[in-house]
Image (cartoon, rainbow, N blue to C red; front, side):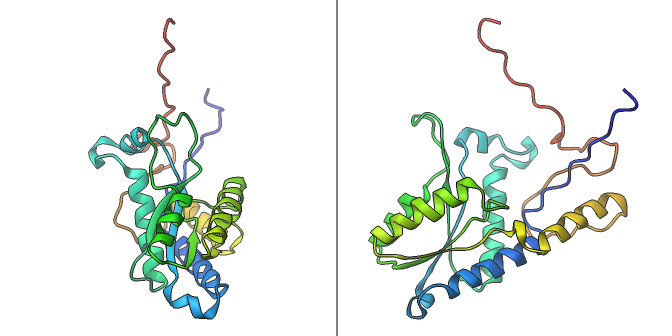
Length: 220
């Protein structure tokens, strides 16, 4: 009804300068935790939560050609690597679930560490660029499973922190709010499109805020 609260969805911020700065500083701090004689040859590896390949293919408006999720993650990784002076980096995935016969985005972080070890890499910095906070999947999948695999392979491992407790993250959120309330110009560094509500009270053009209809179950 008319008295119901209106919800405004903040836009996607994968390429916001404050997010990139926070991750870049976290990568530098992780690099400093490696032995000094291994820092120059450490491999920078970014991770994000894997999703089914079909879901990624359908991500984003059709006009953008699909795979918007993995493209945005790749763009964020590119920006963070550039900000920290890495000429090259890897993007891998973690935390997959569901039936094994359903293809998800790959490679998995643990499998990738084995591949790196086979190529002679003995030090890695892992940055969970797809996550805001150190929640269960970051702590278990990276600080336990991936770290243990690296130790098994004789590889020095350091994980960059997530930006949720960095003072720049709430500043980022305030900026996104001011884009709506005060008409603040959006700050973006990336090459991929991002979506969210554009004007208070007006549905966004991408339909990202519309409730998703689930397919009816068979027999209903």
